[in-house]
Image (cartoon, rainbow, N blue to C red):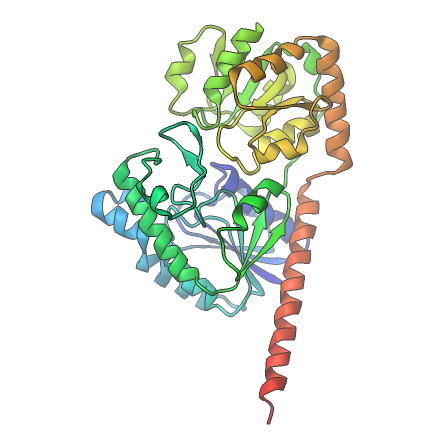
Length: 415
């Protein structure tokens, strides 16, 4: 089996990139031949150093680095990206059995979809966000700090000032989504949802030509003994420090519960958070350092997203390590947290979060929830091998369906 994985980066600067890299490695370790197409130049993660992985760099610029009108035009339809991708696919020594797309908004644009649909093999897209339907990609009103309830590309959607940057940027994204719909119209597409909530929300907006699948993101369980959360001194948060991810809620609610807040990451709220009492911000850390810190400091991990976050990996990793999780009821991560047993699922609001954090001040509560979290996570592991097996099953089914369809077509035109 030969699979092309298409992503914009080859280093794990975010969840989507990390899943693309882990998928490539997991498939390679399972004996699958993988071509990793990297759109934007940059160093490759060591995960791609495997005999079964061939990396090809398209050499495209980050669209938003172009500035002004050039960036807007390329964001809507980047013809150079389409040509580069077509050339790379044509130059492959062997035709792939499947193409799996993970990212397309920073360099590739809707222009790549006719190329992918015309490649003559099944196309799979993992939905790390909602950019296939929603102009700003996250079904979130940045102007109101709340989830969006509008129909994508409706008149109300188009006029809503929901973009995180500006109204002009929103209009570019609207045009991009219109172009995407035109490029995808009537073309078969297989989408992979990483949480059940994503599947429910997307069904009404992606059309009849789309087939929906459900596969968990993979995680690497940190080596070492189980965490001892009852010894932890802080509520921990790992990720970008933004309002939509609820970083400000962690600081406010932890203080109300009488606990320090520990932030591992960086982002636009960093200065605001550093100015608060009881807050420690230590910036981005290596994965090994993150887990060393969490094991020694975290009484719980907080993930109080205001937006409909699909599948934050840190939540699953924390549960597997034996750290209780307090998750937003809007997040896909909440599907893996057993409320009151392995953590708490609450509304992303200060009062509800403070109540959960207060409960975790009790050593017995923290200890019991952490132990149960580790047991539950390991009973249904989201390991790399499990993920790769699910992908191989998906690809194999698509290959069989395509082979059957071609055979039927050949029989139907036989004189």
